[in-house]
Amino acid sequence: MPKHFLKLPFLITFCLFSSFIPASGSVFCPAQADDRYSKSSKNYGTDGSKGSDGRSGRDGRHGQNQTIFIDASPINLDLSGEDGEDGEDGRRGSQPHCGQQPKDVNHDQKAPDGGNGGDGGRGGDAGNGGSVNVYYNNLADLQKIFVRAPGGKAGRGGQGGYGGAGCRCRRDSWEIETCEGTPGTPGYKCTRRSYRCQDGRDGRYGNHGTNGNQGRLGTLSIIKGKESLAGDLQSLQMTIAELTQKQFNLSKNKWHVRTGATSLLAPGSVIADEYREFAQRLEGTFKLVWQEKQPIASFGNQIAKLNLNDNQQIEVTFPEDLWVAGSSQTEANLTTFTVNHAIPQKDVTRLAVAEFEGVERNLNLKIVDLAAKSDVIQTQFWLKLRSQDHLAGSFDYQTVYEGNLPTELITRDYNRFILALGKLKLPGTVLIPGTNVDIELVVTRSLAGRSTKQRINWQGIIRRNR
Image (cartoon, rainbow, N blue to C red):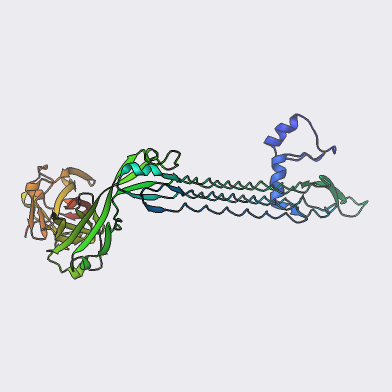
């Protein structure tokens, strides 16, 4: 080791607390050296490149679904799901081209890095076991059916590739002498500066690929009888305008979920323990009656959804941005939904301050509903009232009331609310002319189980009556 790489205990403290390098020699402090390399070192050679990633494994095919009508003949079914394919391993990162390390250069150097390893490919998902629908007359006949419907095995993820080895410096350190002036003259001075070479970094290992998902066991469904079940049409989506044009029929098959599938089939069968038993065919018809004052053309493009439930009633769901109040009635599998009111949500919160008038006991705040829907929507007011008490010489607002506004102080005149603030139990000096007030209202608007809030802030002055 060169003499200027001193191994003295005091140098540990020096490296931690000083950036001064003594003129008599060079001290190597790792943290300082790494920082210097990052800012001023120059590379030589060529870094290795990343290895290619492994290909993902192919997913396994699902087992075939089967529908059978059982008779006296035994049946053997193989509905196994296929295994997922393993992912390929990532390729090794390439070795760098180290080249020839330049000699006696006046800068730090860094050797080339090795290439990173490629990532392993993901394992393929396994196929699920197939389903089997069995039509029967005698439940004991299911013992003649042997079914193998296991799920396949998941493919394993590929291994990450090795990283390439970084190049090593042939020469770790050197000194360069630089002289200024003319030899033999007083101004002639030479200085020596130390430089280092940093070894190249080894490439990192590639990431291992994840394993695929295991395949699930196939399932059994049993139906007593020989007539094939019709398909389900449990739900529909369409515009509200289309709903009013005719009646719509929905249907679905209702099933009981039970356990013990393997006990119904031939011994040794492989299938999920939970199975379905057909219960009944459900059918329903839907009719929409429009009694909203606004024509349905105003809502024609809004999408509604119909869904047949297990009680043979059809539920209608309207868009989130449309508030609907109505009633539903079901008779003889016919569900009739009557729309009494339909209000776009944007029209629910269109309240604004219209007027602030009066003094003392006759002080009123008037709120107008710009959408004119307040004859339908329930409305509650929460009030925070603050005022400036000039008589006390204060210019700060003081809260004089905070809480729900009593219903007896609220009067509605079609689309206008009159809030009788003067009838609140307040200090006598609060509502006199010339008083500045700050009003915060939180208005709760509700209809048919829907609710939202609107916040209104207003500032003004109590004026004298003319």
